[in-house]
Image (cartoon, rainbow, N blue to C red; front, side, top):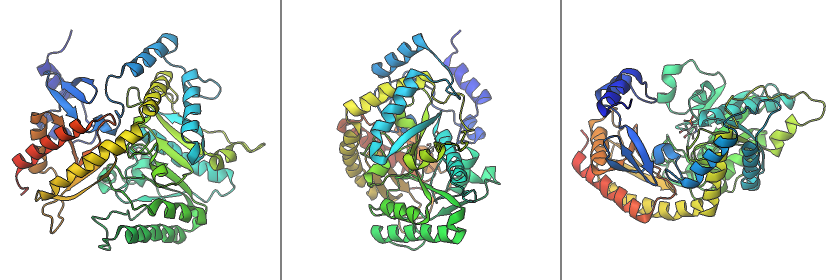
Length: 454
Ligand SMILES: Cc1ncc(COP(=O)(O)O)c(C=O)c1O
């Protein structure tokens, strides 16, 4: 029997724990229950329509309800719903996807893929393969990981340990030993008060260099970063930063892992984030846009340098890592159909075009007293909310001001996301200029109604 909407709300409050939320707050302020979606819109159980300005969770890149993807899933379902890819079984959609990913990321030198079901899996896989790589290379002492402050790499214990924002770490400490964070090229807030993006990039790269030397290069397995920090609030480094960190990693032999979970497949205007900086990492962690969230899937891609250590004749190199659902046929079939759309519709180019317009329009929000910074690249943008622009004070959470922004936007027909003190926009890559105009109209209504944060 179908549950009534009231019964759904009650059961949600009683029985569901929501990620990234205090259960008491969820009970006090029930979530929006989304029932269906199409294109760039979703509908709640009461039939109200909302513009999805966040592509659910930066992932529904080709939009909701695409017939091509649904058909690919159903056709695959008729043949094979699931079979494992452990040890010595495989399946056609997973193989086709692996070849497709190797072709798409040939410019970065990627050649082999290990699958998981979500971004956290992809990161964990990258960290474990990095450690195993060094053992195979005869340098078992290289076990440490360096990452960036404000970086987000998911929720497994490895990812939590390399996350650069205490809110994701504190409740779960003690974390993995041997993980260190260095400064992010975050122009709006950095410890030196540096206001020149190129100089800040050089300082931050230098900090990585010194951190590797301080730890001892022969103890450091890898450096991991997002090309543009997502959860950190669309923090876009200067063009010199990624080339500099590639040089530093090479100087010390350290592996460079690009966390492409948000930036992969077009969001910032290039097929992967590292490509925008002309840099080839050693590994790439990918998820989200790989199949736009139609079925859970992630992929960890490795280059020839990493792969070759596992293929050395006579050296045992079993990968004792992997997930039951890695290479799931339905997820891979969805990914193949999704990536055909991404390429056929040239969604990276569209993200650059529509994202350029979005970022231009967002500049209008600098006039509000609680908007300290506006930044972004492609369809990844953030407004940084502050107590006042002079002090750049952080809003204390949960801020009634933020709750008001979200409530008014919902009332006006848009789902927006505020994480901490950052209002994040990450719409589907099929967003149009008109959708940007509608987003901006609703955001103005929200800021006007919310007034000034106390
Ligand atoms: C950069 C980055 N890495 C990793 C993850 C973790 O992905 P998931 O939530 O699918 O585990 C996320 C999720 O937002 C992310 O943004």
